[in-house]
Image (cartoon, rainbow, N blue to C red; front, side, top):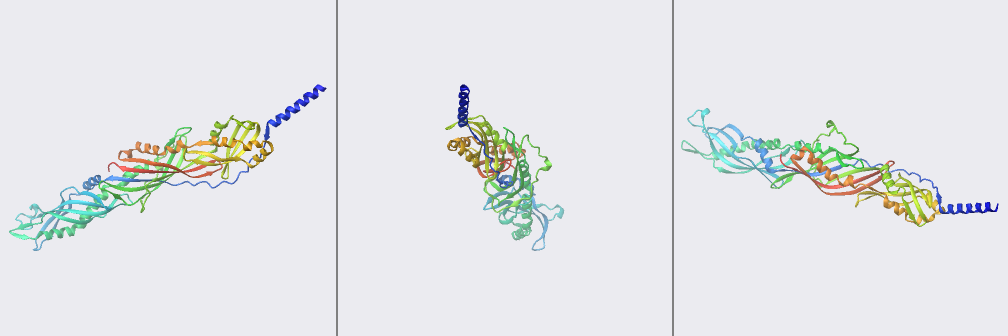
Length: 466
């Protein structure tokens, strides 16, 4: 009997020691607060310069411009003579650019048939009456139909062959006649050059290829799952044209939204692609692109990262060892709630709250300002207050890191690769530089965390040939 009492007392003491060494906590879960409105689908912009060589424009204009600028017509001279005259260009038009204007230089020649010759009118031979070098000037812009617009004006000229003829020994003042002819036919010559420019350069043929290609899915990650960006452009604008001695530059800006897709490459039917819209005009456009990617990190992904980092992790704390048996994260208002099932020196469930943050140096989603939830803190004050002052919160904060670098930082390379593989690259070059990411907003949602990331970069599109 005495031995039974000793054994019972030993069991009681052992149980008391065991209860003292393993504190049980069972706090209530934090009340889930109302969530902020979700971030709306952002608008991104690709800004760049569409440049083309002035020599290429020259070639197009000369190819489209007839040699005869003013067909043969009959003009009456001072003494009633019937002059049959026509105006031709005798060489290629040269184009230059200066002070936001295009300058066209053309060699012209006026031909005539002797009005009182002995031959019949039908068989009269045409002879050069005079020759001159003419300069035209015009502002340049891109019309809403993607054609280059000019408004050519006859600026100045000088004679390279003076307009002189002698008929039956009588001098006839044909310079005045030649000037009259040119004055009457200026508008025809100007319109002919405008028409050749308008027909010679159709920017829509080249820009439409970029427009179509930019809508192709871009794979930005392969592991752990394929991630695709699907740009959806909806407008394109241009600023005033500028240039130099070699090239003419058209600033452009494409506005688009971005869809994300997980899994196999999405199939985009050709008939669902947006068509190149009518061009918009702006007084000024930024020289950098603005790509805003709305990343959504579901709690399942966050929990996978956390499970790999914490499951069965033994933490050596001041009050004893704690083993994390399981953990999960969910949202509440502006905060994230961490639920951790633990065993060891403390046995039960611990709740923490923290705020999501985007680390610009490592491009990762982190959970910061981790602290015990209110009811958990009250439970620990009554059972294991030492845990409140230990480094458990710091340990959790150091491992709760979700990497986003791979999906985001490779965007420029992926865009360039997609562009280079497209047929449009045969005539154009695309370059992206000054790539920089800036977190804009982080919003906690019921199913995950939204991260709006702004990507600043510069993009250039250069026409190799027209």
